[in-house]
Every structure is written in C-alpha cells, then in structure tokens.
Amino acid sequence: MKNTRDTQTIFELSRSGRRAARLPACDVPEHNVADLLPAASIAATPPALPELSEPAVIRHFVNLSTQNMSVDTHFYPLGSCTMKYNPKRNERAAAMPAFADLHPYQPAETLQGMLQMLYEMQEMLQEISGLEACSLQPAAGAHGELAALLVAAAYFRDLGESRTKVLVPDNAHGTNPASAAMGGFDAVTLKTTADGFVDLDDLETKLDEHVAVLMITNPSTLGLFEPNMQVIADRVHKVGGLIYLDGANMNAILGVARPGDFGADMQHYNPHKTFSGPHGGGGPGAGPICVTEKLAPYLPTPIVKTLGDQFVLDYDRPKTIGRVRAFFGNVGVLLRAYAYIRTHGPDGLRRVSENAVLNANYLLSRVKHILPVPQGHRCMHEFVASASDLRRDKKISAMDLAKRLLDFGYHAPTVYFPLTVPEAMMIEPTETESKETLDAFAETLFRITEEDADLLHDAPHTTAVSRPDEVRAARQPVLSYPE
Amino acid sequence: MNPEELSYAKTHEWVAVAEQDGAKIATVGISAFAVEALTDLVYIDLPKVGQQVEAEQPFCEVESVKAVSDIYSPVAGRVIAVNDTLPDALETLGSDPYGSGWIAKIKISDEAGLANLLDYAAYQKQCAE
Image 1: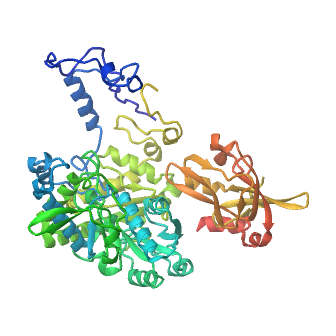
Image 2: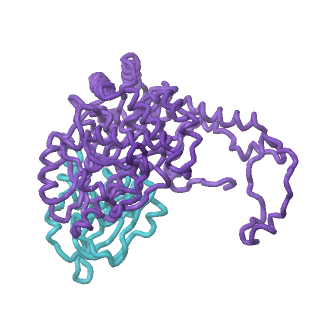
Image 3: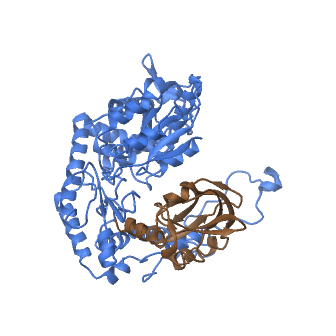
C-alpha cells in the first residue's frame, strides 16, 4: 500500500468538554435518574461519545465525503447495480412535509395522501411486472427474495405439498441461494452453457416434484435475455413449481417485456436501481414484490386497498405470512420511485430501457476491441468483459484495471462477478450517460491496458488510501474504537 | 508430493491414494491453478473428521476476497483426518498446495469414483482451455 493518508477518526479529533450546542438551563423539575430506572439499566460510566465543535464535525464529514465517488460526481458503470442518475425532483417529492412529517401511528383517515401514493405504487408495479398482486413491505431486494420464497412455502404448505428444492443458475446473484437457504429450502445450482444460458439438460436432471421454485435473473447477470425462458417456465410449471424472477435487471425491459407474460409467478424490484432511488446514504432501501393471483393471499400484511372513496390498510388476510417489516415498509424510497415512474409515464419508462440497452451496446462495441467479451456480440443493459488474456500476457488483472480507473475519475465496474467469467469486468453504463462520457471511458480503459503493469499493480495512486489489504480486512477487521 | 503423479478432479481437487492397513486412503487438496484462480483466501471451512462424503459432492468450502467456493470430494468415503493448521495459515494452500496444503484424508468406501479422475497431463489440458 502506497498512500495511507487516511483521516483521523472523529474520536481522535475529540477534545473533552467541547460542544456543538449548549443547552439552556433546565426549566422543569429535575429527577435523579437512579430514582426513575432500576440500577441494572444504568451504565456505570457514560458512553465514550466524541466531543467536537460544529465546524469540526462538518469539516470531518464533508472531507470524508469528498473522498467518495458517487453518481453525482463520476461516471459509475458498476455492473448489475444500475447506477443511474437520481433526479433531484425525487428528493423534493420525498421531502414534502405532507409525506415527511407523517407518523405511521396516525389514523388512516389522516394518511390518505400517503396511502393513495402507496396504493398507486402497488398498481403501477403490478402493471409493469404483469402480475396481479403486490407487497411494498420488503426492505431490500434480497429481503424481497426471502419474502417471496416464504410466500411460495406458505402456498405449497396450503396445497399439502412438501417441496424442498430451489433451483438457481450458477451466474445468479449470491443473494438467490442465500435467500433459498434462509427460506428453509435447499439451494441447487443449475449449470449454464458456454453461451451463458440455462443448461436445459441440467435443468431436466434436477427438475422433479420436489422443486418449489426456480429463481432466474432475466436479463441475466451477463446482460443476456434468456432465449429459452418460455421452455424453462413451462417445464417448471409442469412439475408444479414456481418461477421467481430476480428483478435486479428490470432496467433493461421496462415497458418492453413483462415478467408475468414470460412465465414468472413472483418477482422483486430494486427501486434504487430501476427507479432511481438512492443507493445507500439516502436512507434504507426497498424491495417490493409482485406475485400472481394464486399467491396473493400469502403476501405480507397489511396491503393498501380501497374501501369506498377511502384508502385503508387491509390486515384481514388469514393466509398471510405476516409482517416482514414495520409499518408500510421504507416509504421514503418508494416515494422517490413513485415520483420517477410518474415523471416518465409508460412511454418514458420504455425509452429509459431502450436507451439503457442502446448505451450498453454502444459501449460494448467499443470495449470488445480492448477486452474480450466472451458472451457478447450484443447485450441488454450490461455486458461482462474478461481481463484473462491481459492477466496471462501482461500480468494485469481485472482488479488492477478497476483500481487504475479510479485515478482517471471513473468508478470501477463490478469485478470478479459473475463467477462464470474469469477476470470478469461487468459494465453497465445506464441510460443517463452521454456518448461523450462513454467514449471517454472506453478511451481511458484502452489507455490503461497499454500502461506498465507495475504502475497498475500499485494503483490507485491518487486516492487517500491506495490499496487496502483485503485479506487482513476480512480476517482481522477492526470494528470498534478504541480497538 | 509431485503434482505430476497425482490425480485430479475436473473441479480442481487433487488426490493421492495410498494403502494403509488394507484400506485405501485418499489425501485431498486443491491444485495450484485453483488457488491462483481463487486469489487471496480469507477463510476455509474444513470438513469434520468422521463425516461421510460422496464423490463429486461439496464437502467443505473456501472463501476468497472474491467469493465463496465449494470444494468437492473426489472420492466416496469417510473423512479420517483434516489439516487443522490450514485455517490459521491459508497461505500454505498457495505456497505448498501439494504438500503441507493438503485439506483432508478420506478412507475410500467406493472406488468407482476414481475412474473419473484425470491424470496430470489431462488436467493441465483442461486448465489451458
């Protein structure tokens, strides 16, 4: 590691007695805390909170934030994460007091605007997915996967069927097998072919009446639309199983193809990807799910429905799997997604996907002359290049390229995923980038591949910390202060 | 051990079979190619002594800074020893993959699986593809 100019922690900046705010004298009767709480509830020593002035706090965090890369500062082609620009009007909508100042314990009749927004969101997500019912509760994509698998488990329990297996292709996101295991199923890996599609022969050997669900990401993590989708769905349905669509890549097919129309029984959305919610930093996430009518009774409770001219929360759902999240889910993210969907409308959303796919194909047409793209003469929203030739010939790895890109002001693409492509660089430009940005990125990538290997092995050179020791970070993490 | 005298599974495990008290004992590890491809290792979940294993089925896993990968048992049988030093010295897998980087010893119960293993030349050919 070359640069180690990391900032002092806020604890190191602390000076005893320093304050950002001084409270006025107490004007209500004071009570000794020991008279109010049992002794076991009172700590012997106060917590070691840092003590700083307000400017010191502001400088500390603003300086830290400038060491970060974001979609507001840099091109961010992090494959599979759909790092599109987050329109600021979404923030304005979410900050409106009529939304932001509500309390979830208010009576429903005083929450009508919020409930209407949530109701319309349910309807819009159903329309986009081609499925009949929706729950907005799950708090992230992977949480949506788990909730949907629990819905599937409840459905099969109701049918009196004992199904134990969830099939997951080997290029899926790691959350898929993890969700299957969390849901009480055995995750069984499905092979993919050299072209990157589900191996139908392997599917045949693993498909039986014990299969509950096949989880498929379509378009896949390779940025390819599964050509055998209908065959796969038909075969799974024939043995009584369900199709789960991992909606991570919905940005490629909005208004073009609907999962419910190509065989999916359940899906989640990642509003922070597809519908321009913030990726972290902007609050907790959301992972709403949509399902077919036969699975609707098992969805988490409550669901927003209409009763006369009122919007109400429906808790009367005897077959529900129950709550998966407090109140109505993380409405702040849903609100931003709602603003995005309403801003674009049906035609606009279709153009979002068309431009995302166009941008990805344009960048593919340039990058494939620099790094081979094993499965890509064309793609959907993203493509996966491989640095394995470069690693063999010049000892330059995908990690080296990714780290060096930081020096040129580009966030790195996703590297080493999917695992089916050696030295993978997964590139997703999204629809919000211009041709000039894509050209400049491709030219920079080419320039880096021509650089001296030693220079790349030590990259990045311009960041405060060059290359952290990832092994030590994993094996001996320092998670508290003081150590 | 000399890598050229070992047998290999398509999934990158190496096997050395030796006779011991009339039983066939397989010593199992992962190839230098596999260690290289996995990159920096951070964790290994060793199998348990006494555990029954099936040929070509996962029996332990290794985690790198990139991913968690299954290690497949090349033979069917029962685990009779594991290399307890590995979890605290994962670098051994890279520095001496065919010696002190061994992972487990398995008492073979069914020799049928051995026929599916590759010799050194065939394995090298697979890795080059």
